[in-house]
Length: 81
Image 1 (cartoon, rainbow, N blue to C red):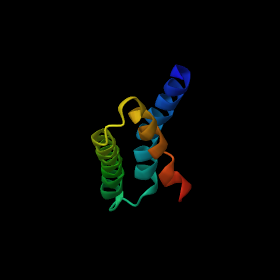
Image 2: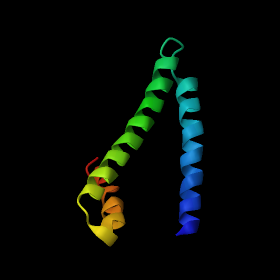
Image 3: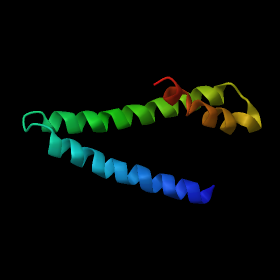
C-alpha cells in the first residue's frame, strides 16, 4: 500500500504542476490567468469537500471502521461521470 501511495503522490504532484502549465500554454492570453486561477480554486474546493466529508463521517462515531467509510466515499463521484 505504501508503494501505491508513493506512485499516487507522484501522479498528483505531476498533475498539479503540468495541469496549470498546459492550461497556460493552450489558453488565449486574455483568459490565461482566470483559467489557471480557476484550476487552483477547483483543487482547493475539492480538498475542502474531502475534509467536510471526513468530518461528517467522524461525527457518526463508527469507531474503528471510520477509515473504511472515508475510502468508500472516494470512488462514488467517478462512478457517475
